[in-house]
Length: 410
Image 1 (cartoon, rainbow, N blue to C red):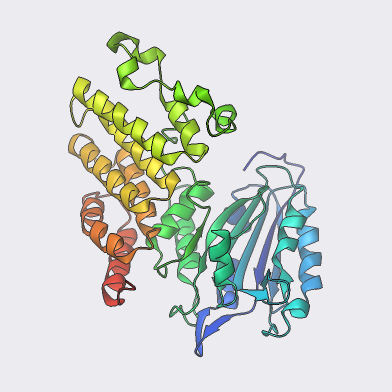
Image 2 (cartoon, rainbow, N blue to C red; image 1 turned 135 degrees about the horizontal axis):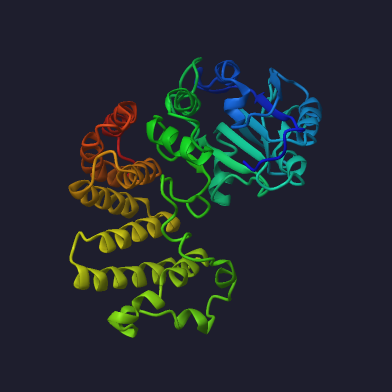
């Protein structure tokens, strides 16, 4: 988060909604999650050295009380973390998403649950970079179709948003701390220094035993590569103006391909900004084709496995992530990591960046067959990294075993 000045105070707001229960089995126990987060120093949660206040809302019954606490937290001048855990449900009359509270039933949603848009309305005016929203939620059978219709969970653009929304019907964690929250806390406790929220999120996803189909926030298009190094595309050049161009702007069609560039002119014709612009404009197929052409061109010039060729392989992996083709992204990140491992130390940041990218993309796979197909090579790669947290590997192995036990939906 940005430096907001020593005269300011931070705020941590922890909200436990109603529990999610399926066939008498607790899927998410928000009170247990709050209790676990309550022992973590607020400075670690906020990633800030400022003095801060912490507010717990556990067992709230009145949405207006929750709104008051949200409004007070949003008014703080320092950094703010809002954590929400519980069950997402829908008011069937208005088809609006709500966070169920302690006494919410199917017939009382309009009166006893927190309308989801209230959250965004209270946070939208806060300064950019000052707000983090952390979510560990379950969508019930009324909310899940709406999330599928939206393609994600609507959230405020003014906050950094990290979290998961599990589908209805999964076995859950009982009355213990849910897997994603537990892994987030574990990473805070075990990682040297205090990792950035994006890194914590990626590592927690890699270690958590998520149910197949879990909605992950941010979505693929919103999330920068979970790597120690900078995003290989975004770092190339500012691409915002090009990303806003119309879909058929001729300027895109003038993006140079390898056949347009003389060998000695390549440094002056960096294609990455053009490719990034295509991807951020949603033209993923074109971006991937152009990146592949450049990779093949670089391989002809410098050889397979060269640092330049490997960099293009990583760019293609990140393009696949942006497009939401996580199977391809997993394979490409794994391949790039194996190539780097052949000539670099297992502790090298670039090797760990590839491992983090591969593991993150693998956790996003909803297709069971693809997840099973890509897992063995990924896990072999992770096991070759002596300093990679063994718990991540163990959790990946647990997810693989879970996938093997789960009947195919095809």
